[in-house]
Amino acid sequence: MRIAVDFLLSRIAWAFREEGLPVSWGEGRHLRRVMGVTVAADVSELVIALRRQGCSQGQKNRKRWSRATKYGLLPDSSMESMTILSEPLTAARDVAAKSAHRAALNLRPLSSREEFAAASDLLAGIWGTSRDASPLSSDLLRSLSHADGCVMGALSGEEVVGIAVAVSGPPVSDVMYSLIAGVKSAFAGRGVGIALKYAQRVWSLERGANRMLWTYDPLIRRNAHFNLVRLGAQVQEYIPEFYPPMHDALNRKDRTDRICVSWDLVSATQSLPADDDGPVALYAEENGEPHRTGIVPRHSMRVWIPRDIEAMRLQDNALAMRWRIAMADVLQEAEAQGLVPVSVSVGGYYVLEQVAAA
Image (cartoon, rainbow, N blue to C red; front, side, top):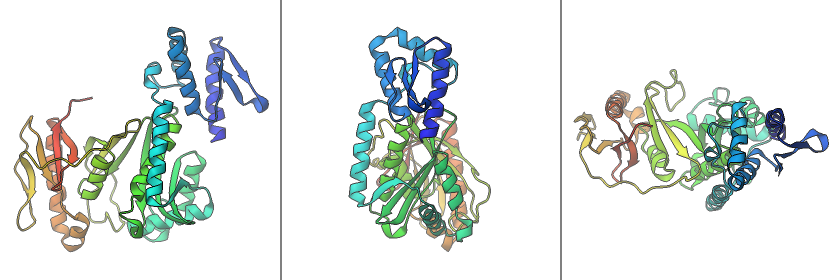
């Protein structure tokens, strides 16, 4: 982290010095002050300090931020785009600490070879692959960590029982991308998953991000509820065949359709499950077959999510594929008319509502 921070700060300092702005260096050529602000331990604290200075000094610092943007060092626009304030970060840290306490686990970035190996084995067990075919190998986890990616672990004693991995977007991006997350089955239902996401949230806010993207299988009801209700993430789009064919136990013989969601890291607002009101666009017949009734434009709609699609795949893969096709048809038709899933109801339906185009 120190190397990455020094590199970024050096770029900022170079651009500011090109503009004749005050920059000073400390021992070892580590950047000490930029624009009269003492550089703190990481970029997020520098951003906080600079924004505070800008808010108090007005237009003068707005021009300085625009100069930094010109050199591609900071996000577009002026200080309004920098959402890394001390208050949201403090609140996020508090929420993460409470979640970790409830789960009775230690949440922290993994760091040792043994931990990376254990995390890779854990993912192999969750996805039903051999150790050599784990979704993320131990060497890749080590490399992601070394590149300052987020390789967050949930540990019970010294045992890795959960993992969440995320990487950043382009340089100085305000977006993180969550690659994968998983929890050992013996620890399911103990709040480990949400504790991992809140730990990821803190890690991301500390590095200047304000939202996180990831994808999930729209047919897995518990994931839909977790993402849309417990985390309050917002659906961005439905993506058919997101991955090439996958051969793990969870995804083999199935299409890899996914929903992409965006999580506001600053607010991270949870919601309650929606009521079961409104017309239904897709439901299960008595024999379990999907039945489509069609999308009604400009109306809130409900779309049934199978109770356990993973069990259905094992028992009747052909039926599961019919649900895959039906869900894809309905959600893509709805999306074309501006309707996207905004919540999951108590009864297990997606609730679709009209959302204005961004």
